[in-house]
Image 1 (cartoon, one colour):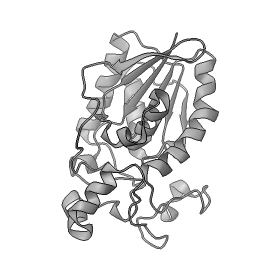
Image 2 (image 1 turned 180 degrees about the horizontal axis):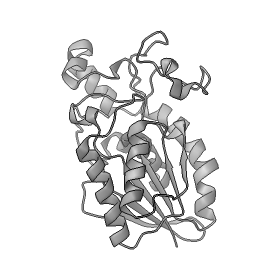
Image 3 (image 1 turned 120 degrees about the horizontal axis):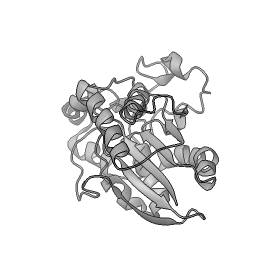
Image 4 (image 1 turned 180 degrees about the vertical axis):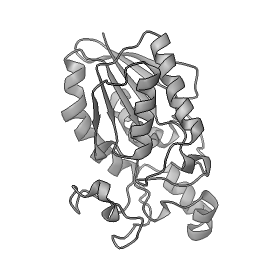
Length: 243
């Protein structure tokens, strides 16, 4: 049996302020660091050991992954970072608080953007100082690879090829894998793994610092899954909680 753990990074400073983070360099809050280290201790207590860890290029993802591994007493575990595991790009909403976004675009549009699988936020132009094109962290990406905004469907199209090419081979080889990511990049991974319908994905709840475990047989058939500690999976309405 092979195990995979998905974990949304610990609380970031922008999570705490209810701001849309997207591809921004939002740092973990002190609570987020503790959430991540506590998740690592929980995983260790439950008997999990991982062979490799994957995370995004974003600061809050990498810092959370490092904190989880500290909690597991395996700080030197191989870690692979990729922009393909970054959070969904929220376009012009990036950096806005939820009330600011409502004032700029209206309540109904903001709710549609969060509750739809295909709705695309207003684009963030290349010249905007918030654009990833202005961030040296993404200097190795082409203009085509850097999004101006993304729907959940766009996020799926970015994340799943990386899953197939870089993560699945480890699982097929019998290695246990930890992925520390972001709410929406993990939502689309869960969609792929669990064969969820598109309309279910925006309702999938992934709390910060809560490991979601998947077990597979030798043929990578899903045997079972669940949070290590009780968590809600779906919500009829996700409210205005930015990612």
